[in-house]
Length: 338
Ligand SMILES: NC(=O)c1ccc[n+]([C@@H]2O[C@H](COP(=O)([O-])OP(=O)(O)OC[C@H]3O[C@@H](n4cnc5c(N)ncnc54)[C@H](O)[C@@H]3O)[C@@H](O)[C@H]2O)c1
Image 1 (cartoon, helix red, strand yellow):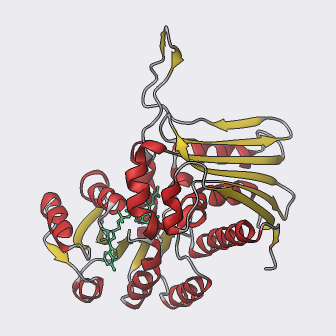
Image 2 (cartoon, rainbow, N blue to C red):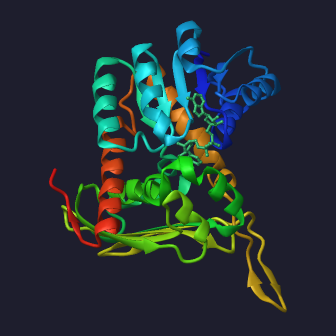
């Protein structure tokens, strides 16, 4: 069996999970090098996973590694430099979302990707690879619910993860670029169209700490797509039940609901009511999707297929996040002039 050799840049919360998946759960992957500026963490992770080559500089790693593909899981503001370096080293690239955070990032990335001919770039919008979201998309494409009228994509992070929000908030890019990008990608994907206009509101409703890194803890985004489909996106840090992520697709002939996930199929009925336990956090809810998206990436590289989540799609989602930021800051509807 042909395996694809990977080098990982950034082994924090998600990079570690990707590295573990590459070693233990994805048969067609081989992890040959790990890099993190936190060298102690890189060494500890590499040792635990049996990876011999460890670096504190991705430049050095890219110059020496036999890896054919680079998996980038650094904070968003560092994606651009990593992608540019990986393109210059002629690697296939799997990069975590969002692909970049500024217009300049997007332009420089497009330029570098265009020159990295015959190499695949896929961006980590894993919800597209989740079984339930993929099944709903297939049903919409088959016409099972008629013509799509309205989409509702909801992401409510568990307030129990406040420690992470405060620790990582300053580097992850804020509500629209870090969190709502998942929902913006989904509504664009399901609508099958580009945004025409968008209106975003939000603020700090509970966690005053968000002000220190210029972020908000809740938002709502109302979108009209060029083909007429309407969408609502919600982002919240206040879910007390766990990781409350779900979507509704309303069509002319029916409605699809991708439910918020529970940890088991057990329902408890007692003096407190009828209850199911909510999935606690993203690692549990999307465990399979994190594997599946990388398996698809490997298949795309090894079988010369068209990438399913391209730099173009990733760019469009960042442009929507930028429109949302502008709308929120200006308090006005923003129209797409592209
Ligand atoms: N798809 C999802 O559900 C999901 C969930 C969490 C995070 N993410 C994405 O994953 C990425 C990482 O997020 P995280 O939560 O793991 O953050 P994190 O801060 O936990 O990890 C980032 C790691 O990158 C390292 N790093 C920073 N700059 C570096 C550099 N120049 N060279 C090498 N290493 C460097 C840091 O030391 C850290 O270990 C982000 O893009 C984030 O949006 C996606």
